[in-house]
Image (cartoon, rainbow, N blue to C red; front, top):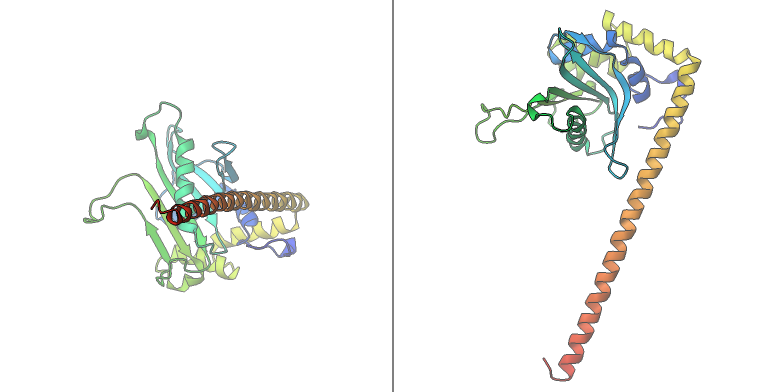
Length: 264
C-alpha cells in the first residue's frame, strides 16, 4: 500500500495508520468485533495499535495493526484479536496469518506455562479484493480433520478474511454496514458515523500528523532493511552456486583427464 504521496488530510480508514489510530479506541473496536464475529465481548482492554513483537534480534518480527484482548469477570484473559487492514494483495497473506498466530502464541505463554492456557485467538484481515478468488465476501477458517470435517482440532485459533469490495453480497447486515464503509467511506449507521468522526478528527490533528510522518519513516526503514536482507541472502545463494559450479567443473575436468589416460 502506498502512502507517501497521499496528503495526510485525504487519508481514509483504509490507510493502515488511520485504521490503527481509529480502532485503538475500544468503543470503536468492541462493537466492530461483536458485529463481524457474532460474539458478545465482556470487557475489552485498551487496544494496542501498531503492536510489535520481536522474538530475537535475528528473527523476523511482526507489527500488528490493532491488537486487543478481552477480559473476563475476574480480569482474566478470555480471547485475543488481531485486526489487520490489508489494501494490497501481496500473495502471501494466508502465510502471514499463520506467522502472526505463531508470534502471538509464542508471546502468550510464559516459560514453563501449560499449553492448556492458550486462549481463543482471532486473526482478522480486511481486504478490498478477493485474495482467494472464490467469489465470496467472507472467509472463515478453523482447523478440521481432513477426512471428517465434523472433527474439530480444537486449537482455538481462527482466521477470518472480509472482502469489503463485496459488501453487497454479505448476508449479515451488521457486517455489511462496516464493509460498506470501508469500501465507500460513506457512513450510514451510528457505528460507522462514530468511525468517520474519528477519521475526520485525526485528519485535522497536528500531533497525529507528526506521528504519521514518524510511522511512515519507520515503514520505509523496515522496507529498506528487508530489501537489504533479501539482497544479502541472494548474494550468499549466488556465491554458493558459483562454488558448486566451480567444483562441478573441476570434477568434470578431472574425469576427462582420467578418461584420456585410460583410467576410466
